[in-house]
Length: 488
Image (cartoon, rainbow, N blue to C red; front, side, top):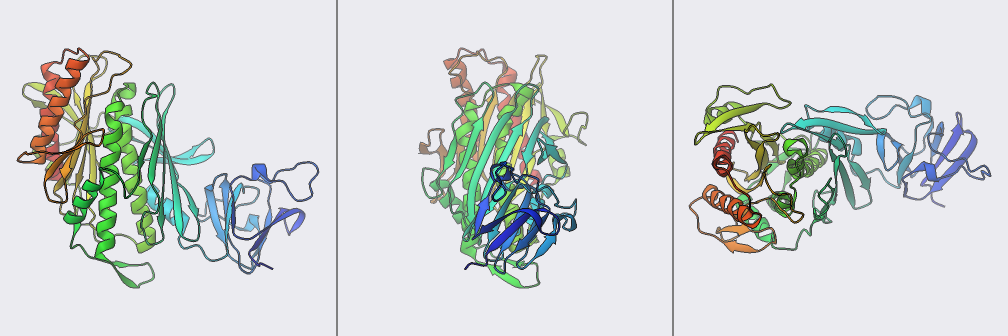
């Protein structure tokens, strides 16, 4: 008979109603589970006050359904009054709070609490609180308001499955995105990365799916492997044991990290064209990309310890010097600078930056406004990826025109991805995944041409009278790009 068992009791000291579960399993919602032999259909939600585990059972209990909220891992051969157990973060006891649990017949390979805490720490300016009884981090970036919920992590014998829910906060109805992917306990992707959007007034936003070994974007992955080749890192695993992470693993991780960021933005950017919160909707996919990169980073920190190998960082002074100003303006929700380009006024917010684990390169995104007297400013969203040496690896952008015609089939002008293939050739990856080899002196030149052409083509297709300030928005973004390159 299996000793992988857990028994919950309604009352303290292992009395009252009870229910025993046998064998490794997951129960996502006690609201749907009744106490044994209960004719009154009394569910177990927030109703357990004591617990016993068998000699082979490791049980992680959660204060919310779907493995969310406060949590603690209970070891085998344990008997506890839950009033005497505090959660992993020592916030409160677990009495009458349990709503879900996961049970294993071995000690879990990773500590999910550590992963979540690592993830929260990557949003240092956020406010961590509860909404609808779910923990989340609310923050401003690029002068728009977002919310990211604590990740849902499900463990099996071979992998960790992750779900991230995010909101773009608006006055009426929030935009929403859900991210799912899975990785094994060595940090390799085992399943596709998928993002599903629920966007206000933008029902045509496609679900985004990348099969890790499939599709045109593999060309970018191959290029990333070449750029990252030769890297080697030494890590301490938290108990003092030094371990070398193989070069091939780092190359593979870096390639896939770059791949999903490149492909995701390329797929959805030109379809995001609503105007809520002056750019917050179009910037939402960039927030999603950063969340994926940061959760992977948080997971790697749990697997291999704190990353002491980061050689890249963002230098604010270098950015400001390049753009030609002395300091950030802090009169908005996020620091920004105002500058002139070709006689027109523009605004750049401080870029969002995520640095991949173990010298794996970085992701940067930014919103640039064309400052006008209109109700809303026109703006450009630009996302860039830098290789482990700090060199520009890829760039993609999209422009939101406040003055555009409100045609149902309108899509915003987008540059497509400019990057390199595995022969070192510069390529353009269009939104339909068509790959074309292009001949430009630099990625910056390629981006300038493709972004300007996309603006011209969109204006012609939808009969938009593009102003000189809107045309020069591309040049303004190139000035910001140069500043980001100086800062990385």
